[in-house]
Amino acid sequence: MAQKNEIQDILYQIVKLLVENKQEDLQVYLNRKHKTIKTFYPDLNKKLNSLIKSPPNAFRNTKIASVPVDIDTRYELVNIFHKPSVDFEPIWDNSIQRALNQVIIEREGRRKLREHGLQATKSIIFTGKPGVGKSLAAKWLAAKLNKPLLILDLSAVMSSFLGRTGSNLRNVLDYAKGMECVLLLDEIDAIAKKRDDNTDVGELKRLVTVILQEIDEWPESSLLIAATNHSSLLDPAVWRRFDLEIEFPMPSTEQIIKTVNLYLGNDKIKSKEIQNCLISFLSSSSFSDIEREVLSIRKHALMKKTTLDYAIVDYFSHRVDKLDKESKLKIAKLMVKLGTSQRSSSERIGISRTTLSKKLKGE
Image (cartoon, rainbow, N blue to C red; front, side, top):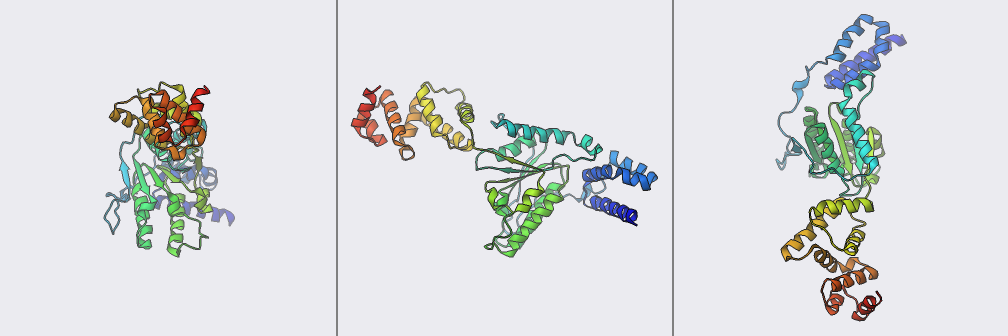
């Protein structure tokens, strides 16, 4: 009786995977159950083996042809990049690079993994503060896999009518399932919050269940990535659904230097002291913050027809509220060295002329 029940369960699961159009998942499942089926039904096992090698495409006509739109605004719910690319190799920790490379290897070796009853990584969650490279990593993966990148901003898909948010979400996911792609669910914490949060209405809590179901049912043919800036807000059940978690830290000093040099391009900082001040000032910045600040300095130097070194010092002079006393003295001293008078330097930085004079004489 137990054997009969086991075969019934296997047949049910096979039909379920076919109906859900999970062809690669079906291959993995059949490989896992190969010995059981062969024991009881050797002839059936031979026929199923042909399906493993050449899966049917009967259900491929279920894909949604048009990009889903919000019923209220008529705005498209997902941004599509058909041929994503990155302009430079991202500056990541070695641990992050190794994890992403492993995903590429698994995705490209899916057939070999299926033959051994294994699945390639099909879902990842990226965590970390804003601007540390989560979206860039999704774009990089899509480019390396040569797949379109679909980006769904979950904070934007929220409808004023919460019942429609679930419909919007399912429409986007059904659309993405109809193609081989990389789907990025950005700001997943906007929806997948802890279900014990008493401030949220029941409909919003039900959206967590929708997310969990969709992650479980995601086909292996595509890669699902979720990103969050607030991992502490996520429902604990969400973490268990993802095959892999990658945390993106804030840039190290070495990475800050590389990022500054990257966005400086052919421009060079002549003064080592000015460069050290800039690196120190950017010590708590994200990659995107560094990009914005360095490009702003370069534009300032170009528009004011001044040197890059002077543009950096001038940049500091407009941000004195973020500097401690020692840093203010350093910047004022550098301003004097670059030709600004002691009086003007002390006034712009907000320190006494006497203090600045003593600092200069003490060198």
